[in-house]
Length: 351
Image 1 (spheres, one colour):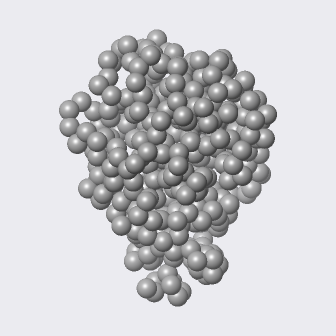
Image 2 (cartoon, rainbow, N blue to C red):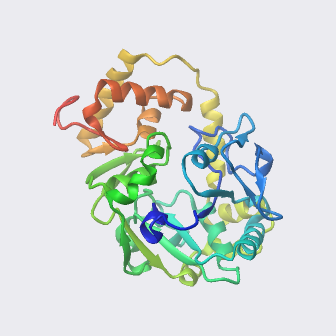
């Protein structure tokens, strides 16, 4: 979406350096995946591997990256945080030397990369802090961009306003078009809400297993530039992990500074999910459960939700997510406000 908006989707496809760090619905193994968790990766530099369409995560791990590589024209390269911020810095320096890029954009959806680390609503600071720390150490200009302030359900948009610059661009439905097919299956809630707001959806969306309410406003589809050095100076965790040489070392800093590690949360949740029995999706019972969920959500003022939220709220697992989605789209297609699910005002299927 950013490539389409900023660069017109023309010229050479972007190289997107990103984590293989999917939600447990997709990847039941806690934490990010490294090169050792895949087959079929291709070397790009000494420490950077690309993820082509034919790459496969090694079971039981899962990853959305190979399918993204199959459906989009860009090159996906793997951020490997195994060697901490120093390792990611080395990967960036190698890529810059190899590619001689015209521009380098560090994009965060939601804006929690601008956190201090002590915000009570902050849930996942480690991945952002590692990337921020690395980008601040390379000998090349990196532009920090925040899309969809507040859409990740962590730092409210109003708390981010004095930490960002003016609006650089506003996503529109036209910018969403190149990724429309991906949004039909990819589980990213923040990207789903970003795309929905670009398409004009407004309301209050409930996300995650905790059912966090996220406002869908005119600010949703905006992209702001932020000062990279200011972000580092504000982010205590990013400063602390600048010289880390392992993910475990960075994770320990997160426990000390933020009071927790998001990977610990994933470990605990994965253990609980592993103890839950699996059963075949019962369409009639599922729709009955959905009706109760929607009634409860409506009483909280919720207008939209994500398929991930419905999956977890109904006690289903990642393997059942696509079956659930197919059931909902076939039984109540009028509630699909792509890529979100609309909560009807009064009972199923009513406007």
